[in-house]
Image (cartoon, rainbow, N blue to C red; front, side):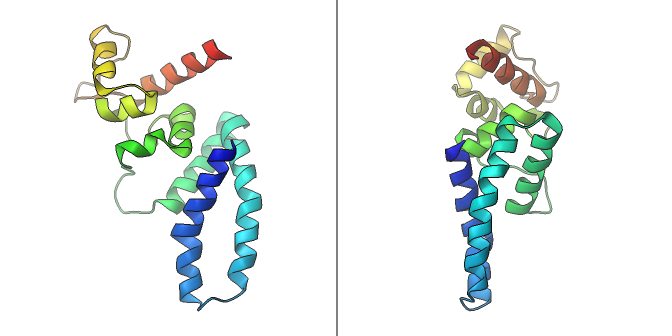
Length: 151
């Protein structure tokens, strides 16, 4: 959870607060915002990890829509799924904007290789999507099943 909070703080600093500090020419108010973000990031991380599904998803959606704005669907690079934020998103909701994900993305979400995903799909342990890739919800379900086995 500490790594997740640290990633959130880092992202907010880089994507929101640093540009704001430049815009307002280093105004001291930005320092106050940094303090608030550090305090809140721990709470957001705790909700993402330990909150009920609705609360966790709400915080995740707010974070993603704020930190990764865009006119198109959310499509982070494959390596993003291996980060603390990527891993909690995968576990709590799968891919937030895609019904299906590529084998490479599914592998990153699951912490295995693309070939490992292919093998799971070939053995019927990970349902394929008719248009390619595998079902995002099935990846999330597999993560939840693995988490329950380790709990």
